[in-house]
Image (cartoon, rainbow, N blue to C red; front, side, top):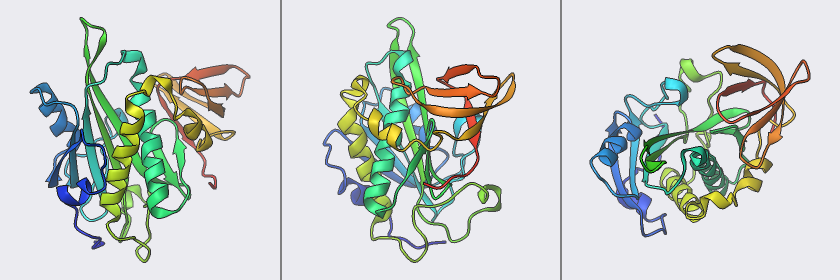
Length: 265
């Protein structure tokens, strides 16, 4: 286990300038998203940030588990009550990807890439994942609340076998900076909240495109109906991924999953 500096509500709060954020810290939870969803259902107001050093039931996209071992990463969820249409909920995830990538780059002074739609890569390895879970108000046709969850691998002593083929960490053992986890959480939240009030303006689109991990790569588009080979052609103005299949047909993907070969960043 890597013994980087202990994390606490106080250590994180020191790096958050946005005064609307309230920080709670737990050493271990089932899932920060699961806990915050329950708090949201019970009427908790926007701005609660729950941070943990370990999750026993961390969640990824499509119902997958998310490796959340103690002493390797930091896991946090932010409760939001945005005035958004369901169709615009993708903006939360894409904005969070930009916010996390900027924070990681600032603290580590190393480049990142964003794999559509919600993963952060460094040196062809996934170092962070994002899961946004939302509840809809059917009468109003708007989001009732959203819980934005982010998990970031800070530093591994040894990468677990089940994720060693894809996972990486922001830092190697000999280069971790002081207070790294707290800094990255704080800066990620500040970066996100800066864009949040004008989310539909999509001011973060250019950064997202600049860090596009898939552009011009051969990929595999994975759907319930099967898998198809394609080439990724970039991100459109609505954060959809444009793909060209081998038969020449093109499609804009707003949801779904793609896999890709490794490439340098």
